[in-house]
Length: 575
View 1 (cartoon, rainbow, N blue to C red):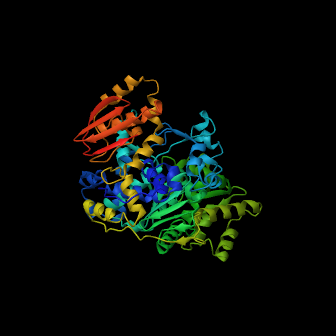
View 2 (cartoon, rainbow, N blue to C red; view 1 turned 135 degrees about the vertical axis):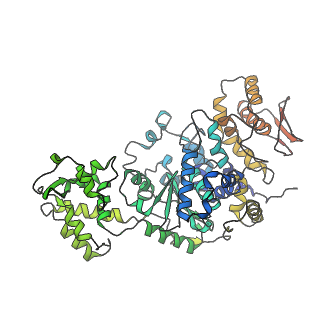
View 3 (cartoon, rainbow, N blue to C red; view 1 turned 45 degrees about the vertical axis):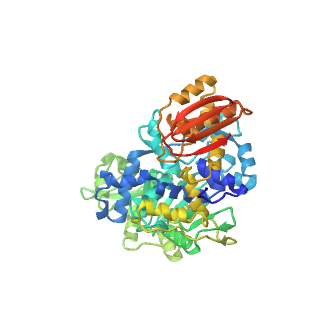
């Protein structure tokens, strides 16, 4: 007897998407984003991290220190991967036709990078398709950028040229979200997932806030440090529309009228993110601004006293010397040490014409931080930027500085949204894995995200097989292409002799492209992978699969094959 809720026919596409989990599918079905977080929380893999010596003394650490510890573990064990070949290719026409019942082509084109969205104009000054390496294909070809489960991320170590695990940005953000709860004891309600058309990251409500950015972390202080690394971390929020915000209470999507996130939770997120991306103007912030906006450095000079005499240095020379030095222009305690390292020949003995003396601004801002929205204070600051011969330059500096100290991300609008939620998915930090799994399964009849999470785990003992089969037959092109030059006999031999080892524990199954990419699979997984290729080669040939008693019998139009299986599943089906 089935122990899972019945899937309505009009929901089968969504449920099959919980198996394949491409970026495109998550955009169309935003429930899937948090479903994968829950699937990772239910995974035994991540709970084993708690036994790792790296986390041995975690209980004695404060929350941010725990998060830093987690960050280093993720950096050491996972790479960022965005290889077009990993999960294969599809076409715009196929995807548009597939999602037509749920979202129109114009909306997809406005919101997805591969369908016309351009986001940061500077970032895409090279042409989006060339940037992603798609220019070698026809213009309608796009990749299946699939979000990996934790197991698939770990399995990258089996691929050639990979030393450790790997995953794309959504994979890393959902991994972080699960690990923040399990390893760092961060409450679910304080972890927000943020998806834009080109990126996915998390905001963590700890201290002044922390952003995950692929494998790394960004604190509020780092957000305003003016470095190239931070500028890249800011790119998504600074230049793109946020399409999805999700946490354990639900989601809000820029396209859909219905939101399921708790309004008070979304309001908390907005306020915390606004505070995170806003700073008062201090001398340190001004100096960090000039580090990032190097085009304005030519407007400034800095005075330095050497042997009791005043000397003046073009500020760009000081920033050039920062590279490889522990001393910074922005640091009052080390600035003079930095300047002392610079060759005296770089200095002028008189103030440089038409350049603002940074020291005067430092004195003005000392103990007098300025808020960008305080008009009188901003007028006072503008008066101190005494490049009166070039008013346009002064205004450019002021406008750039205001932009630097205050970012207002383009979040989904709440106006005209209907908030309707089945309730939060909530369990306390410290709750054990088995209790969490039992709780999530208890919600399946009433909470779609909980039900979809069980599909994202790939556990065929507790799910309808149809979504798994549909995703396997329709969205696994890699194994089909990779084996295209093999004869039928060679294909069978290749799958029969492949390493008999699943990347998933228990009754959870890998999809055909995972079997091929990682060159291993349980007998049931390899039999299904073989069926997938066979169906493409011989569309009209009947295929029957039967699994029971640790044995899989595969009937390829009268050709009987047997595989051993440790999945403990019993099923008969015809493909």
